[in-house]
Length: 152
Image (cartoon, rainbow, N blue to C red; front, side):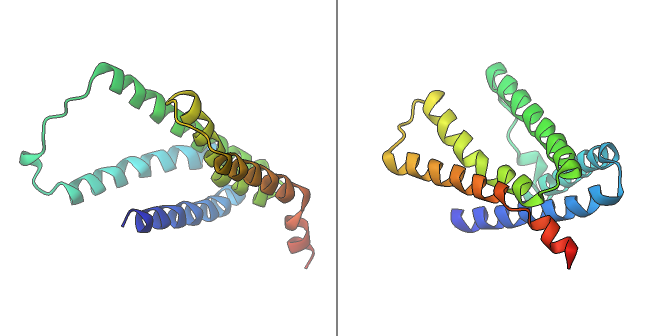
């Protein structure tokens, strides 16, 4: 079931990215960014209410200060990443590269940080996968598919 959730998540992220492309084409990225954050907030509340129908049975939140700090850092990084993605999308000539970096590079970053911070091992298969992702990004950057589409 986890794989299905991951596939749905990837599909939703990809679809969201295409919609973001349409939005930044005709609107100011700062307006889109602010409105998107408000929508995130309201959708999060709706999802919370949908999944936690019995609010009175919900456990009292017990989160350590360390976990709150990590949560703050994660939320800040996510917010900055959203802004930088929208900015990059509005300025990019090669949207394929923008999307490739957004969706493929986190695999590399996650693997390296998992090794450095969490102390997990990187196998030769992991390193080969990281190299393949990087080679794929280089190949995407060498093509200018946007110009070919616009010339038709």
